[in-house]
Length: 258
Ligand code: N5H
Image (cartoon, rainbow, N blue to C red; front, side, top):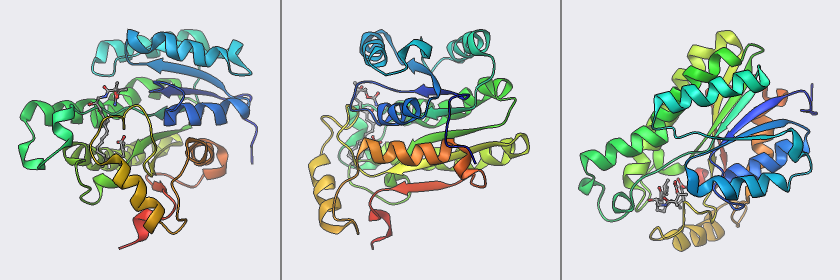
């Protein structure tokens, strides 16, 4: 069993700022000694991510690259660069989702074809698109995680089109786990409870969801980026060597309450 990740390399996709769940995961992996490759969505996040990474204790060994996951060419280009620079990778934290604001309020029935497909494209298909390019670099086996949410399993007010995209992501995790298991590549998801991140900013009813966690979750509180980071460490490391195709709820037990 290996708790030290100093000879491992992970790709962390989707850090926007220091509140990002992806950043909580990155900090945990950095502390364990892993080498990290960060990818960011567009120029507006570049400086943020580079500044944050430069503050990590082992900043020198990490890399920061752009990757717009709506483009197959960009994903191929990013992973070609990763292959050239580090060779083998041991895992990926895919922390990427998007839905237009109009899709995140009112009735799900108001979803537009474009809004629905855009959410599926960025939030669900991107995991498969990334794994197509990452697979050839995972020659020593590996572990991949993505972030999902309860709204993909149950109806959660306002989550709407994102809920359907997360259901698709959850199913993708199971099919990808089945495809890649023979290469000792595991694929799992963390279903985090609500955390105040940039992606949650400005979406309706977020405070009510936080309050419901405090009132009804078995732990009677919300969870932190660090707690998601610790569970990510479990899933990305050898500690979880027998676990694949799984959705791990890091939500203070909220999803178990009827
Ligand atoms: C039930 C809820 C609250 C309502 C729904 C929130 C859904 C959030 C997810 C998506 C991914 C947010 C999103 O795409 C917002 C964008 O329209 C606008 N924001 C941006 O473009 C910013 C700048 C960038 C950084 O954001 C992204 N995503 O690129 C769910 C909450 C209780 C839990 C939650 C917040 C879940 C989740 O999936 O994040």
